[in-house]
Length: 330
Image (cartoon, rainbow, N blue to C red; front, side):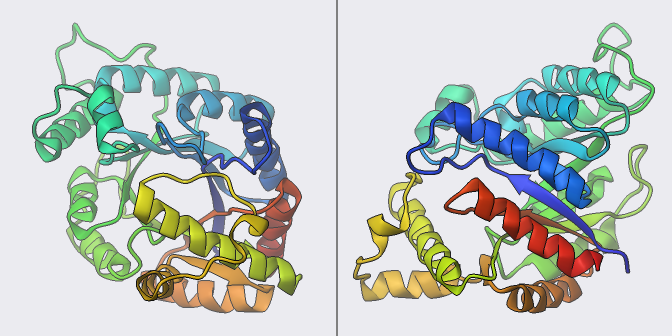
């Protein structure tokens, strides 16, 4: 099986860096990943967070696609409840027109925000599940080559090819939705480390071919940090442990470095959370990383993995992606 390696970048702020430098790091990483042979580069959507600033993936997609030549670039994903399906379809038709067959439209049911922020993004939301299904149905009709809505309403410009459509999921329920709509599915192992295998089995068994995708297509996403330096591995694991505790307790992530958290004495409750959360990410040497990734690949039965990486510097981040590329491309 030929394994495709892909990148999910959340544009995390390294403590002490500006937002401008952070977004430049995302572009720099995309160009570097293309040189390493990575298959896709996805941008996430988060709102009102202090530690990750990828709030407008559609803009970063255009910027990155303009600076690269062949790597597929997409949203991982657009939080559909926040938007008009027509506007999303128009944005991605423009992107597809500019970069034919290189654009991915990943979508998700989350808002990418806390409750208060989500209410501002979509103040009229009443029934999230129903509205998501309705919007997903509408956007797929706008994006199909033969519009199934009123001919008076089209997602302009008309394009010869269509963005590749994915649903980002962390539950069995959402995997079933992806199967019903005939979409690719990417399971967020970094959110739910226990249900992915079952979710993808159900997805494959219930998949209905669509105009956009004739056969099931699946991947999973996970946080990974790979290094030859054991001290860097230790530091990054400690920082990841703290980030998840921070997110659970505050609903937000602040930029931190190792010095900020190295002396924290965690409660017994936090230690249990840390033990669970270590299923969400891998930190280690190339040998350890490959062993754990191979095990997950076998469980999920996929030929593509989405790797998201936090590091103390862009250099460490790039080195992690290079080491992993060397593991699977040798």
